[in-house]
Amino acid sequence: MSSIKKLVSQTAWYGLSSIAARFISYLLVPYLTYKFTESAYGEMSMVYSFIPFLNVIVSHGMETAYFRFGTKENELKIYHTSSFSMLMVTALVIMALIHWSAPVAQILQITVHPEYITLIAWVVALDAITTIPFSRLRLQERPKKFAFIKIGGIVVNILATYFFISFLPQYIQAHPTHFLNSIYKPDWPVGYILMAGIIQNVFVLLLLKKEMGALRFSFDFDLWKQMMLYALPLILVGLGGMINETLDRIMLGWWAPGGSPEANKAIVGIYSACYKLAILITISVQAFRMGAEPFFFKQAESDNAQKTYARVMKFFVITLCIMFLMVVLYLDIWKEFIRNPAMHVGLKVVPILLMANIFLGIYYNLSIWYKLSNKTMAGAWITLLGALLTIVINYLAIPYYGYMASAWATFFCYGAMMVVSYKWGQKVYPVPYATKKLIAYFIIALIVYGINTLINLVSQNQPFNYLFATILLFAFIAFVARIEKKEIKLLLNKS
Image (cartoon, rainbow, N blue to C red; front, top):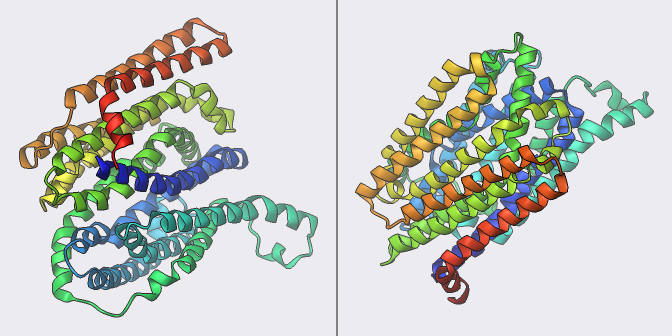
């Protein structure tokens, strides 16, 4: 149980950085939905849906391979080899991206601004350079420094975004003869968001100077081949994951029933803004992934590893159920973060996306079986199954149902991945998950949401509705605490 306590402590720090990372998105949702039109916000969302695909390619599974081999081999040798591999692949991808910037801009429907592709290349390259140094901080269990650097970069991003979007236009308007007037572009909002990302990554790189300074030109080819054999399937996993997570925005831009490219971008903007309201679930999942991956690998050699994994899953699912209720029970409050009322029409996707992201979080927890058993190709097949569902459902349904099709595609995709991973994993690496109990918690959370929805349909008294929602939330927490009383005591008392 002490190992779980350690995971909770580390995850709290990773959660802090993750919360801050997501919080910038949350801060920017009201800010950018106020500053941008639905179309401009949609264009930004489509651009930022493309970046994760590039991140998967340039990282080519080296981050997870570094964790896998770094627990067994000479860590410094692995650090040098994986970093050098990242740098070489990044250079090739970025050169190709810049060379084919025109067709890429056409795919993203930003042909008016093909220079955005060069900015995307810089964002991806700088982010790639910091990946392995950040992974080293995680492997060395230094979450405080990790969180400090992440948060510092985020603060810089906020300041840079405000400077470009608000301060600079006002300053130029007040000083029309200033030299900045000659380089400022009023029709370049997405470009300035990308510029803020570049400035953030440069700042982070400076804070990682110690880790960067430890790098040496040392490349072990035999070790690299072993790492690549392990990592190559993870590229498929990553690409499939990005298809499941972000391709729907690009597909909405292509096929949404808006009637014109600009109208389709507006639909993307509405969907993307409402997707942000799933933030509490995505924060929890991201924080868990950062803390759990190195933790799971280190726990693998212990005698009670499977029981530890089962306990982790239990508390993780309980946390996600509480996060789900905290959003859906107070959705009328959360929606105010979207400052453009025209975007509120998309709020009906929020509960669907929250449930989908719960499935995704459970899947990440389950995925340890194929990573520990070196069957990473299994993860690739599962993720590709999800990607196939995402593409087929979106392709068939987007022209008729718009962003609702994308929301349900995400739900069925992650749900299928979760179920298949559980069934397959229990045959290869059995873990005694409390499956029936966890399903019951999820169903009870849905029932609580359903009761609250009925009350909101009947009552127009908002203070009463919020009070009733709060009672329901605390009743759920009290119920779970009563059932898990013994486990919670062990978690709190053991060191």
